[in-house]
Each structure stands twice: as structure tokens, then as C-alpha cells.
Length: 339
Image (cartoon, rainbow, N blue to C red; front, side):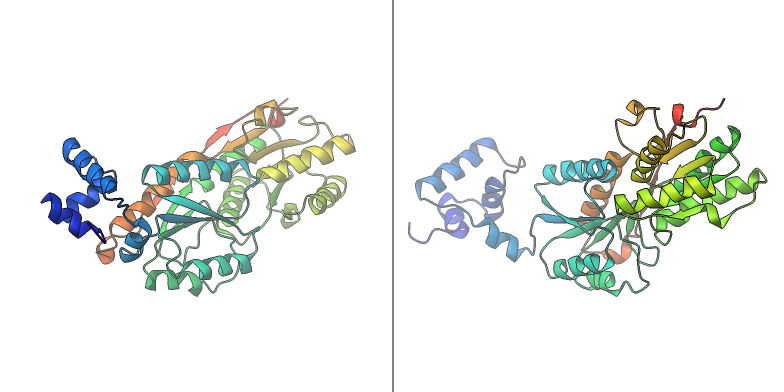
């Protein structure tokens, strides 16, 4: 047979074109003998389906984009593993884009991806600016987006977050109960969703225990290790907190370095607790008290929400955007132990 295609195969074998397609796509919804007969006949006539062309006709790339602030962070590494596991089972690939918390990079990536280069986007946002029209354009292009961990509240999208307010409240209250009264809150970007929510939990715990909020103890840090070292050195020498609540793990580690160099004993002189998904936190000296997010499960939930959106494209108006909230765990270790 010359110029073999699926229609000719179907005619020759007296089988529907949909059955032919299922055979090539590896579907289990087809009789084994029928599938073997189709594949054998196709091989005999040197026919291989053009899956790429098929994907173009169906407007499917079988690819998802994952946009995150950083990769060298155990939380995001675990979340990516969860996303990749779901995507792989669905026959999809993922493309990673790192913003480094640079808003312009985020805008550039989204604009690049909104022309059919991927089927959907999962992202943890940079958190800057109020103009998010670049994300609203995704909806007009029928490209679904799912936020995880960091979100934009003004964008109507599915979200996966953790109970950050309760976790921050509990962590701050724990430090207060061990005797701390000057608790510094370390944050990289107060404007992002998690920075705001976690800070509110911190402030409300202080209020409950009649400890006045002191803006001087809210420490704006950086993504640069050397800059953070200088900031925290100044904080520990001049402001002299007796407790540290770190909203991200790298600031807790930076505090450990500074304490070591300044000879400040943890937890005798300074108690520390931090959001962290790092597996070696219990092995630090002293072991770091952590609020640990279910990062891997968040990745799985985010991917499942995206595939739900892809499957429901035909009737988007009837599918409200879901917000899944998972619970973090508080692990009290020696870094914040009481006397």
C-alpha cells in the first residue's frame, strides 16, 4: 500500500479509525489480539503515526510548564517531584522555569508560554506588582493555570496552599511560651501572599500574649546570602532579639552561620524556628525546629487540579476554581527548646 495513513489502515482491516488510534496510543481499552493485528499490519507496511502532527491537530503539546522562584530549595524540589509523577502517569512532560523572584522574568515566561507552547502552567508566583493582565491573557488563550504555595488573590485560578496563618501563629506562640519577648520575624518579600499571611499569624500570636508589635523586629532580607549575612549580623548585634521566626529556611541557616561567628548560643541566647522542608533539619547542631509543609503532596494536588482543568475545558463556566488547603506540621526540636 502506498501513502499509508490511519484511514487506509482502518479500511484494510475493517476497523474504525478510533480503534486504530487507541492501538497506537497504548490504550488498554482495546482487545489485545486486535491491537497486535493492527500493529503487525502497520509494521508490515512501514507505517508509524505522526504523533506530533496529531498533537497539533488536537492542540495538545503533552507538556506542562512549572514556574517557580528557585530550584535550590528542598520545598520546591519535593513539589516538582510530585508534579512530575502525576504528569508522567498522564503521558506528559514538564518544563521548568526559574524566576529568581524577579517579576520581569515571570512576565516574560508567561508571555512566551501563552501561545500554545504548553497545555497548562503550574506556578508559585514572584509576588510583585499589581498588574497581572499577562496572566489573564492565559484564560483567553484557554491555557489553565494552577498556583501553589505563593498565589495572586486577584487571579481566578485553582490554588494549593497550606495553613500558613495557623502554622505561623503556633510557631510564634511556641517561642513566647519558652520565654521569648523580642521575636524577630525574618522575611524576604512581605508583599507576597505567604509573607503577608505568615506575618499576620506572627502578629496575632504576639497580641494574644500581650507582647507589643515592634516594626523594628520585622527584618526584610534578601535572596543574596552575603547580603543576608550582613543584615542578620547587624540585627543580632544591635537589635538583639531573643527569638527568631524565619518565614523561609535559608534565612534560618543564615542565622546559624551568624550565630556561630558571633558566638551566640542556640537556644540558650537565641531560639530559632523556621518554615523548612529540609530533611536534614533534625541533624543540624542544634536540631532546627520547623514548620514543615507537605511539599510533595502539594505538587501532586496542583498537578491533579491542572489535569482536571484540562479535562474540563469544554465547559469552563460550570467548573469553579478550587482552593485546596493542606496542613503543615510543627516539629519542636532543640533550636527552640525551653530552659
